Length: 343
Image 1 (tube, rainbow, N blue to C red):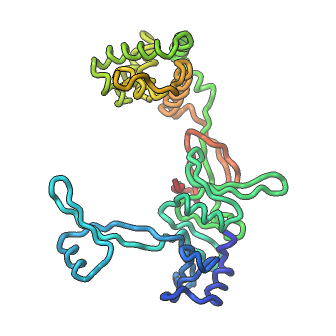
Image 2 (cartoon, rainbow, N blue to C red):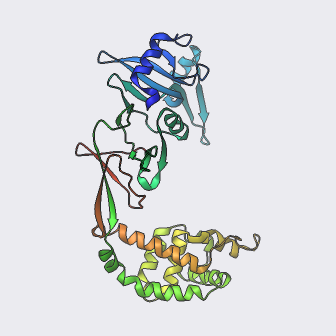
């Protein structure tokens, strides 16, 4: 956050005129970019700077009496809505600065925003010697530093209330990141009961073309859900329960129910198109039956692992260390307490 260091913002506030109509609103860079600014404030007797990018709107529900009184006063941004039952709801919209964070005299930046959208992350990247992004497989919002002379780079998860040094991006409090890794030995034992199911189903799906597979799917769906195919498989938990019960006795049927339950290969949509002649053929972008089997196998293995915590080993990473993407999530610990990472 080098562009937001305390010395620079303090110098701007002492040497540049504030925006017209304000005593504490100053540009961060180009004055014409008046949606990027900072507000001078006071916190426990210290001069602090609230960094702002744009504004956000918040709706506040009103009673009819409150709404009518504000109308008389000429208040802006009032709205009244009538629903289908004839009931009226009244709102006003408050517009407030979108504060990205606070810069304090110790030259730290605190992340205080409720959430950071793409534009917010882009602005923070411009102010930083790295970039911010959202990585769902690393828990959410992360910061990546530039590659150093040794070809290495650092990264950090960004959590609510996090404070970092503006020059170095080093957190004021050390962060510990705890991830999960599958213990292959335990995992192999857990999956052993599904090996016959996988072997049988793979052989069968390799031997089927797509149209035969769809026709077979229609038969299976009718057998387990009746004639009303249009409503089937929207309830994935029901499909999974039925599939779990017949994994050993009817492996292909079970595989089809899993596929429908998780909508692998867009089978729900394609099945309905196949049954409804007004639409003609199903999607031209379908997976092969074997592709769907492989996707099913990955999904089912993942569900089995999730349901059995003993399959995981904990792996610990420290602040700045690049940790790998994971399907199992990460826990961030600061001062022995778990904190929430920005989504």
